[in-house]
Structure formats: C-alpha cells, structure tokens
Amino acid sequence: MKSIVGAMRRSGVKRLIAVSAWGTAATDGEPFIIRWILRPLIIGNLLHNMGEMEDYLNKECQDIDYTVVRPPGLTNQPSTGQPVIAENGRQFLDNSATQISRRDVAKYMLDIIKETSVYKACVAIGYGKKN
Image 1: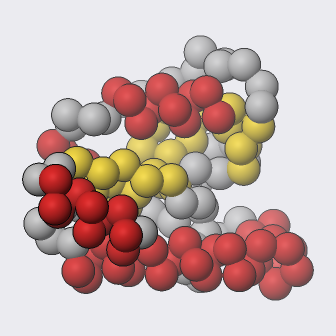
Image 2 (image 1 turned 90 degrees about the vertical axis):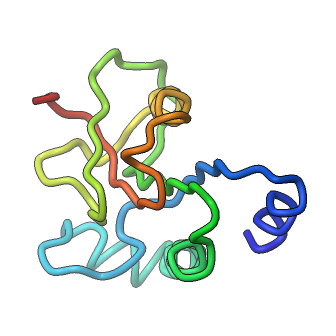
C-alpha cells in the first residue's frame, strides 16, 4: 500500500478505494466463525496484514481520500440485486449474510467513488435493508 500511496502522491491522485475484510481487528460480539475458526485457524495472518494496511491509511494518509471496504466472505455468484449496506467504523455487520458476491462489492465500490461521506473511512458492508 505504501508504494501505491507514494505513486498517488507523486501523480496528484487523491481518491483510493481498497478492499479489506470483516474482522481485521478482534472486537466484542464478532461472529463465532471469525473469532474461533477463521482468525486462529485459517486467515489470521491475512486479517493481520489487512489491519496493518488500514492502520497505515488511518495514521499516515490524511492527505488521501481513502475508503476501505470490509466485506464478508466473497463468492463468485452473480449479483443478487439485494441492497448493499455499509456502516462506518464497523468490523462486521449484525444481521447480515456472511457472504457477498464479488460483483456486488465491485458495484458498491464504483457507487462510492465520489461519495464524500465515506472519505477517510473503513466501512463494513453486507446485504441488508436500506433505511
């Protein structure tokens, strides 16, 4: 990420949207599967590395209009047509499916390119009902 941000700064590019994952930092109330299966047995190092990327952006990139998108598990299924909801600062969403289509994640990322309300933010996303 440091190389990407360096190139952005040299080129005068300010907008960055990156993909991370649910559960990059342990929190109270996180889903059982993240706390007891995924983190300790399967993807703990990956989540740690994603967390370091998020920390770098939060601490050293205040000149960049970044958004880190934290989806649940990704699938190769077609777009579902369900609304994708986002909550700023969350590690995961309550009452949301634990999987999401890559296509729906990509569409969400394109939809927020000019959305200033998610600049300098890490947002957990998932399927849900929009208010």
